[in-house]
Length: 148
Image (tube, rainbow, N blue to C red; front, side):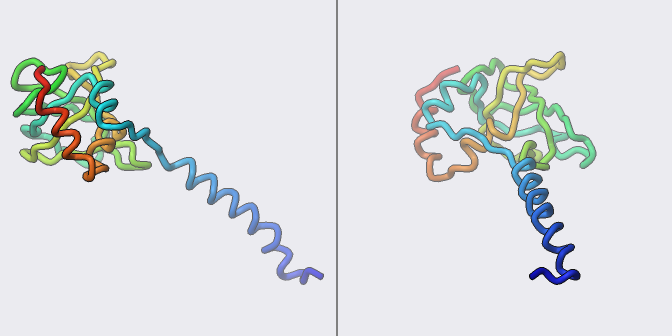
């Protein structure tokens, strides 16, 4: 027997669970995590460098272009500077962030937009390496022998 005052809970609770479950899965993003060899082979732009300024930028500026000083080019970079377009939006883990003058290993795709950027970066490009510190040595072993 269902008490009248609990009838509301018995009808609204299942609907609430469904809505919460859907919104949690809809906002999450999943990236493939290929082996280091495959990640390096399929990424057209790889370099080690640091943003020379403007990487922080205003918090409300979602899409940014930043110029990197290239310390070591591994793939797809000519010269000692490269401009990368990226999103600084960590909502649903779709953005990425850089700190001025802080060197990082960058994995990017060739630019598909009509901007001055040489490449575009997405969270999944970067997290494949940066999210797996246990594989860093394997990445560096593969990258050491590469020339641009």
